[in-house]
Length: 302
Figure 1: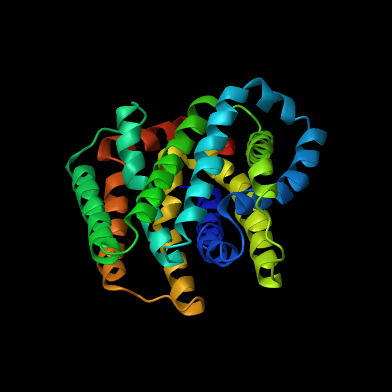
Figure 2: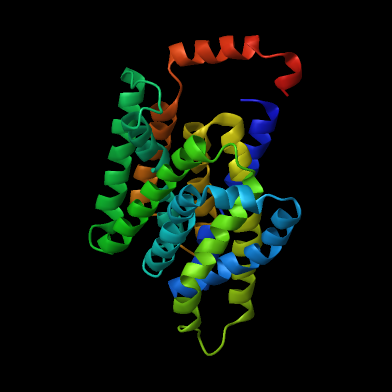
């Protein structure tokens, strides 16, 4: 991975590790659909004028079916599912379940013909990772909220599909145009449900949580995510979820008073190890990548 790729990766890991805590705060007073709307609206107001001035809205609208699919997979569906799930699940549990995204992605990309062959190491990684998810669900969710856990798993599937859509049909479209258009579509979709379920009042804590989700987790996060996909590809871009659960667990335990459970202790290392092994490039693909890089002029390797 290039230096630029590492910078994008580390920054995005941190940015997308904090939304679970702020979502847990916001859903105390806001309905899931209301939170999704107010998470997208400020980002729309910030990004759309900028994208319009740069002429990046029109190219995105010309590819609107794929942008709509991207919006559904990356925003509209997972955000409402995660918000609803976090009414009953802790932020650390939610973040750890989302760590299954690379595992799910490895299977989806393989079926779609967009992934390297599954060698023994990758297959072992998938088995280990899914055992970790099963351990987490069996120990911590067995008598709790299985429906909420299922919502998070569906959201993880959406997050795994999103990069595939972007890499196949949207890489030649300016990222700012795709992000702003996707956010606009999501805001429009949730406007009426959100405005008809507004609470009588909200605390300053909730307002602050929504602001962080909108401007940091959404506007900035998705711009960095598109740049990361362009830099390292769709499969490796999902590897940000290796670190996201660590950030989510640490914040949940340290700041939200959430317990560090046996399920987390067992599932966390298994999921992370499985994700690393399950998405690592094969020896052949690594050699091909180096050979391809050697053929690229030095001025294009920065």
